[in-house]
Image (cartoon, rainbow, N blue to C red; front, side, top):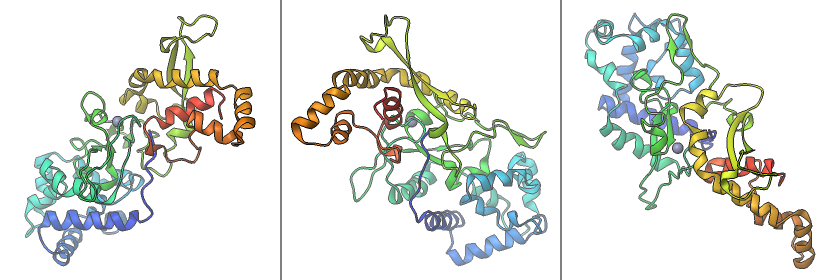
Length: 333
Ligand SMILES: [Zn+2]
């Protein structure tokens, strides 16, 4: 639920990722793998008039909005959705090229992930919290020889969309809980309906999509439970926190799949502490402190409530979205 902001040199990095996958998979120097790709992509069954298919291996580095378009392409759809025997028939047309090569190039295995993909992500990125839940830390440690704690979730499930199994933008750094079968696992957030040629729930976007706006559209809201008498909040059981989307329901499925409302109930103590702090330090008290210490009012407020800036990268701190949304709910900002 936090937008992924990659570093400025992301295009360079995805190019490096693409080259690394291709050379490892073809097990040959870059020059030779370029020739192999050229040969595969020149074969007559790839419709060369369609520029989307100039190089089907570009799917390794294309963004969601691009590879989603590719699903609509008849030839690629044919490959992606082909059953194994149909796939073999298609690939047999490659003649000299081993029919298993293309299938294999997109194939994901635990060993390949550990040795190539995770190693690449660990070396080039420093993630802090899980992009799905913003609760758990996914830090690297032992710098400079870094050890990672993140997992890479296949947003489009690798079982159902095998050709996206190694696509850079399909790999979302997440915590082990979000990636587990108890939470997202292999759930298909965007089930592709081949009869109508459309994705169900197409409006729900991947967290690295340029238009991913979960943070703007969905906010944590504070509610009082029936046990709360006269709005006097005495303990955390008097409150409930829920993610609510305003004016649309684009992210409903997302909230449901990641069980965010249920999982955040265990963290009501964070909100309860904020409420208590707000009671202890009303405006008048903050002004007194300003007069007493000479420290500007805003600075004191910032320090006491650990307020999070509107432009802050929320992925850099656990529970930052909860804390910022609650600060708005409590009128602290
Ligand atoms: Zn998570």
